Image (cartoon, rainbow, N blue to C red; front, side):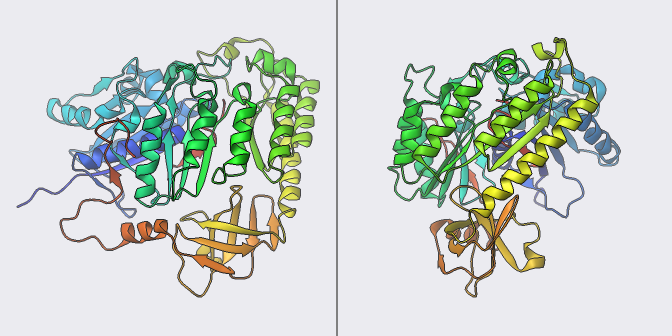
Length: 501
């Protein structure tokens, strides 16, 4: 009687870098013979937590989830639990001490060891804790199970060379290590060949790409090279750092048709005094100057950002400076966070920790202002005709409203009326915007055009009924000669730098 394949589930927390790492973990497990657990399955045979260490409640969140699984594991002999990611890199042996029912703990540098560690834990019947201090293999050389057949992440670098006082990421991800441009482009070409229409270039500080190659214009050159790849319709990137945002990048964005008019650039604070305390290496004037240049080159660009409220020492005057930048920049969207003290960061030991009540009041004022601006900026889109890349799972109410959803070129979320002809995720539709809300746009009349694409074909193929004995679709191996291969996370946050870069 054939052995039944063991099932797995990967639960992801944190930034896009973690989402991409989870695709690698899924690919590794499927290559090793595991099968993804169905949505109606209460508990998989192997549950992997890919953790984030940025937010203050990250520890409580993990141990709460582990506690819920403890009785389920006790009732199911052979079930395994693994913990990886940034919190695993930071806490190491603490995890198995606080949750002794965990079987495997692995870090950000040795994702590729996951299947081996699971098997070793099963055979030896004891927890395996293995945390590498430096990157063992660039993640893109590992198998991957991409969540989307029409859009894909492509890492250009890992690690970070900055020393922001509030951020623990450099200590957990290590110094920046860049991929060769040829490897990046080979991966993009492979993805396009599989039907992908949109790629997002990913790095902790993506536009610092080239720093360890000695080429300050490497990132703008990479954008232009992506523009020459036939069949690649949309290019995005996240997250750039204002310090490294140079004029050649703006020119490349404006002059390369498939680079989208969208930019996510973290601000963190509008106060130059606080930016200095954060070691952000730019000031308010520099940041607003970049925004002005981007808008001059791409008037319709949608710009989003990250902002921290309540950094140690923040005064009312400092906070008013942040509000000033928000009014001047007119962000399409802002991801706002209350300062979270993280052990091991310089900011955690700073004087002037702001009382929780004060932080909450400022946070609410900032959110209210940004909601007003987002709505006003979205209202400017009414009457425009845009081409939307149809997405899967973007509209939570699509079934109830009989609508579909997708992203405009500037990354705004668009809900639209279903056309009479079939439309698949990955296809393109042309719609006219008729209504605006703070966080989405609506096209109330059916699309004026529907363009079936190779990406839609790829989605249809992936979702077709599997043939007996067929391998799981969506898993791609690393390219053998140049080391490059080619989102569905619980809490994926914006910005490749965990929303704090």
